[in-house]
Image (cartoon, rainbow, N blue to C red; front, side, top):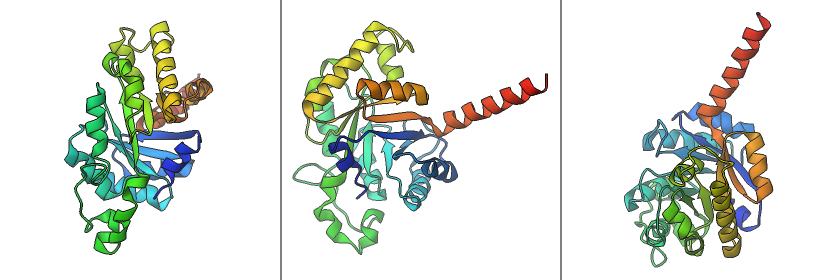
Length: 253
């Protein structure tokens, strides 16, 4: 097990980044940078489940936990990721407590959940370590995104669902649904963040959010967010490259 769930339960603040390029080398570069976690984005990223496996191997080689965001909350999608060895799953756009209860059941074997049982897959060393089933339910991290007015209204109930370890704000989606797209300083967006933070604290779980850069990430941690994503492999590369080009152009004028 990655120990990521234990660190969240202990109150640690953890920083990571999203992986959208579908590249194992990009994943490894982010791993050696020192992030606490990495997350393959199957909802908006450029890679698929086959690309995830190569990124998973790269992260494991550098001893960094790998998570994944599913494109939908279908049971089979979550099961395939867990069988590949991810440490946890992020569920996007769940708008009700009923949606959340159904989704997080996919993370665990019966009787706690409805994950399909098999031991000939990668996470159990292709059948050589079936005893891993005994503790598999304990270590999986469940991350539920709060991205709509409906989810926000049910935040306290969602936070209390067993198996939810992180309430994760999707800033673009949530601000858009609140009528202030991209205006993260808008009063209604700030109020929504406060609501998520209170719900997470009351439930004894972590609040998470995606930040655009290190300064924004630091500001979110000051508010109380403990599971903070900072950009993505693609955005970090593009921003760094843009700054290099800007400096070169400035030096040549």
